[in-house]
Image (cartoon, rainbow, N blue to C red; front, side, top):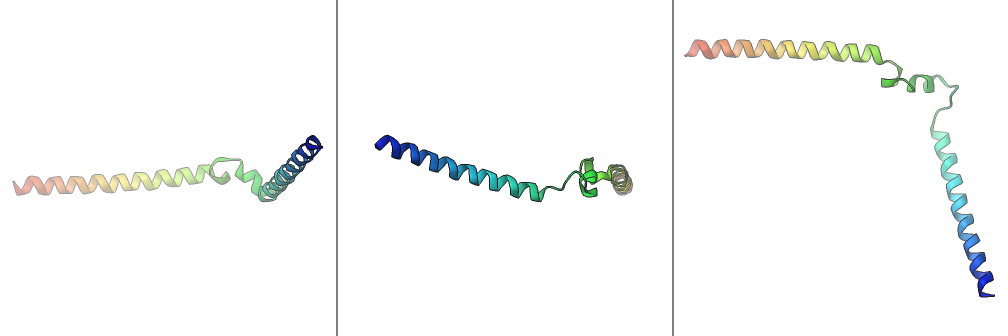
Length: 84
């Protein structure tokens, strides 16, 4: 009799785990876009599908910031030399 209750309780716990896992899998499937949607096609590429414009824009901004920094350093070094 004790073995029957042990076996039944193990089956009950297993059933609860299976239901919880199944519910979690269904919830994650609802959050992920399907393969047929346009969002999924763009999400497979880096940077949301717009990798070239994003990288090019980032590169331009970085180059501009570096040029400004170099110009600032040059002017401050000229000022330091003039004060000596």
